[in-house]
Length: 129
Image (tube, rainbow, N blue to C red):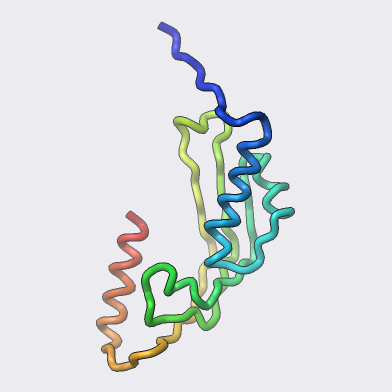
């Protein structure tokens, strides 16, 4: 039997609008420098490249590192690739290049540095999984 082709549940163009909204909703708490106009240009092509984003000071706390603040942070390039032709079976890929974050501890400074590094590595491992 021939494989049935899935139809989009959203009218043409509406899916892209929903994706734009989701990107703004989920990225905005972590980075500054996003604009809806910049997203609209890239989303339709299937590849979205955002450059020179500033990491927000509260981004680390939002990721579960409550005792830390991004004193200075930059993402050189964030690339999102959406396989529109194989959306149901393909993979959406997000790539970060040149991520630099200067972190400072806030609040209780009595926590040993080794413990802080261990917690950060563990959080990173969980995030990657």
